[in-house]
Image 1: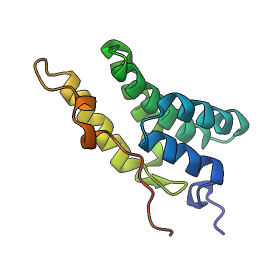
Image 2: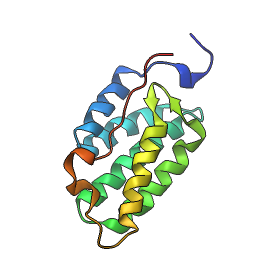
Image 3: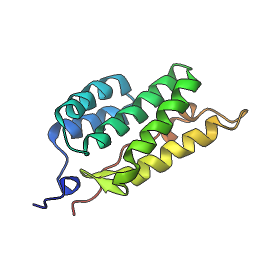
Image 4: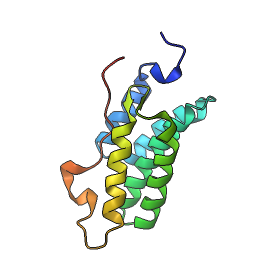
Length: 130
């Protein structure tokens, strides 16, 4: 196994968070990721916090709070940026790009809202093992 913590495979708890995120269960995903984030003392904790913030941003959007969504989607992208393209088996580059797509839609009034697009909801994808 590599000494680089980003190259470690995702834990069962992180895999549970991926399933929750992809099901659109952002509140439960937040709780799952928060436990990982609190227990992590290395810079890697920003991966958990960044994904958590993107998920909470999507939750805000579902609830009609576009201002909160914009803020948290941007913060989440900033937190995961140093770990691109991938970390802990997560395709962070794809997540960042999908969050950017949502931000673009929010920044363009009159556009159809992203979470009304169903299958185009951002997903948290896993990469193939390294």
